[in-house]
Length: 290
Image (cartoon, rainbow, N blue to C red; front, side):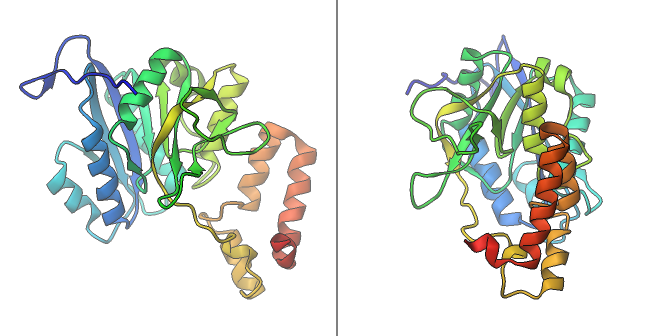
């Protein structure tokens, strides 16, 4: 695999520079956030590009901001309310970045990934091959080469990198590159969603605007996936506990937000059907295990 050559003089990228705003949000994952940022800085500089970082620290109490300031003083840290969660934190970071400068690219980065050294170069190379498109990097499990996050096909199956650029229908928000012209058409993440769903919603909003979505040829990094079902599906938990977990902002199938998402993209019938089935599985969690 041929990567973009680095071209630095006295620490500064020379002429023909393109500016990238790196967006991420964090909350009380100091070590993971630090490892993620370290892996990113190990993957840059990339010749011809300059990176500005906009990180929302959403009310961390573990000293995350202090550690980041000490290790990476060039990162712009934005203080969140503690109630933004992933999607609204990313929305805030993107809003601040777009007000700061008119960037050529906006790059979503989830703070629990560890990038391979070539990931950013390949992401940007793919964007050159597929201009005016959204490019997603695929994460794999640490122990084995199976995709955990990245792009999904229309059939809902995760796409496995095969050494070639592949089209995807929607994508997760772990590593996503969005060109300026796409941002001008699709806009920011929708803050109606507090935590989950916003990345899928963005992909389908782009689809409706006839914007292509692709994944990089190779795995971009490591990010393990929780092997157990959501806690609201666990029959050993009391019903009231499962209900609180399901309606938590961190619930990956929060009925209200999931209904809004499906109504927007799949219609009222699908939204109502799944709203009912989610609560049926809440009451009878063993149905989820079958």
